Length: 488
Ligand SMILES: *[C@@H]1O[C@H](CO)[C@@H](O)[C@H](O)[C@H]1NC(C)=O
Ligand SMILES: *[C@@H]1O[C@H](CO)[C@@H](O)[C@H](O)[C@H]1NC(C)=O
Ligand SMILES: *[C@@H]1O[C@H](CO)[C@@H](O)[C@H](O)[C@H]1NC(C)=O
Ligand SMILES: *[C@@H]1O[C@H](CO)[C@@H](O)[C@H](O)[C@H]1NC(C)=O
Ligand SMILES: *[C@@H]1O[C@H](CO)[C@@H](O)[C@H](O)[C@H]1NC(C)=O
Ligand SMILES: *[C@@H]1O[C@H](CO)[C@@H](O)[C@H](O)[C@H]1NC(C)=O
Ligand SMILES: *[C@@H]1O[C@H](CO)[C@@H](O)[C@H](O)[C@H]1NC(C)=O
Image (cartoon, rainbow, N blue to C red; front, side, top):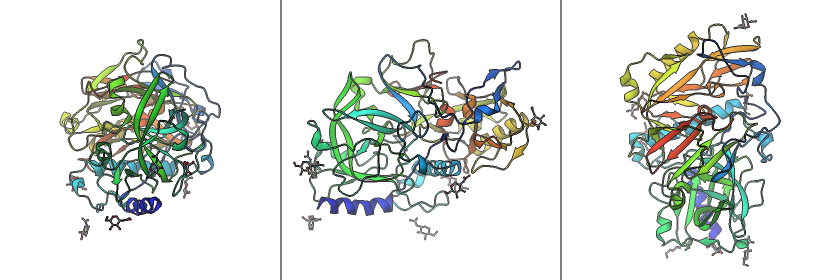
């Protein structure tokens, strides 16, 4: 009976949902620039040892950002610092990573476009995927480990500021579970586990504004959720409550999450997903009495380093200065974190574009999108400025949506222009060298930015550009903080 209910939900979710999966800087396939940076005399260029492009197979954890509050270690899901090794053989290559990244951005654009209120199959050229208005956008590529239940069981989850619902695979896996590294959570073994019933107020949270989560109650008295991602990955199961343990001293009873009975996807062996969007279902909202909707993270520069995710103020070292830009209001989607980009400098020079172009641009910051997307006019100007400063190096063919690529195989060291973003409030954010380029071999290294095809689409400040920055989300205070050197 239950399985039937769930099975019919699967059909529904197949129709409505899309799936998503990506990673970057896989130790196998995507190398990121790391290390080897020195300031040049000019000050407007980074110097690289090109061989620092080669992947590192040893984990060098960053010691920054620990010790104070509720802090979790963040690592890239593939790479030497991750203990999830199950899916390494199936790790997507750089082309797949970029194509999945484009799918995620297409979904973001669709969810924010004016006609997305219609609850029907997407009919535009933007995406060939069948999508409903609330389709979820993806799974992110950084992982953290939390405890669930009593006694607690450790679960490694992908964390994503673009998703609201937290879920994990659950026994007895009535329909199916994919392979995961840790034992699958068994509600029977937790003394604090509770089902949420269909007629409770908590169950209705699953509907409106829940960022792509579908609710199915039918005749079962247990509230059922379903969520799908961009490549036919999904999780469907019981909407439940149990104790969430972030750290030994940060324990949250009655945390609401999805207990997945039908799960499919390439989640890299992770047990599920940790939703950090701004809506009421997210961890951020559910922990608001403990942390006042404040969290911060630092994404490591390479997959061989570690970062952190910290809940609450005071987790950031006082030595680290944060500059805050206001979140902009956007009624179209209460889940995403909107910010305003006001300018960009390349090699010390502001892009010469009319201020009005930036003024009319809305952007979001997202932990799950890899490559930063800009309105076409801004991206063109950035590309021109970057190419002008890179004429010493031979260009080569493009890589997916990246159209400014270089063959650096003949050069031991290279000089690349610094790039700095400006956010509202004159907040200057220098992009770490790792975030300027993206490539899979020294013979094809590309500028790691792309243009939107439609000037009216939102920009996305992606995770490749956020690396090593301390990024602090003060949701209650309505502002986003950036600090330099939150991790390495
Ligand atoms: C990536 O994988 C896809 C599918 O397996 C394959 O078609 C493509 O050629 C690969 N690309 C690269 C750059 O290896
Ligand atoms: C999709 O486009 C076709 C033809 O352009 C149109 O007939 C159809 O009504 C559209 N469907 C939706 C759901 O908008
Ligand atoms: C949980 O306990 C019930 C009742 O004892 C049992 O029928 C069921 O098989 C158990 N489920 C799992 C996943 O252990
Ligand atoms: C939760 O609900 C499911 C489906 O109704 C049921 O099989 C399971 O035993 C329930 N678990 C608890 C702890 O109530
Ligand atoms: C659900 O309940 C309705 C009305 O009570 C009934 O007609 C239907 O057959 C039930 N469906 C299932 C799957 O039990
Ligand atoms: C890079 O290598 C090419 C080919 O060997 C060489 O001509 C060029 O001068 C080098 N550029 C720099 C900036 O070192
Ligand atoms: C760009 O988006 C707007 C608003 O969604 C739409 O009206 C317009 O047709 C789109 N333009 C193109 C070229 O797709």
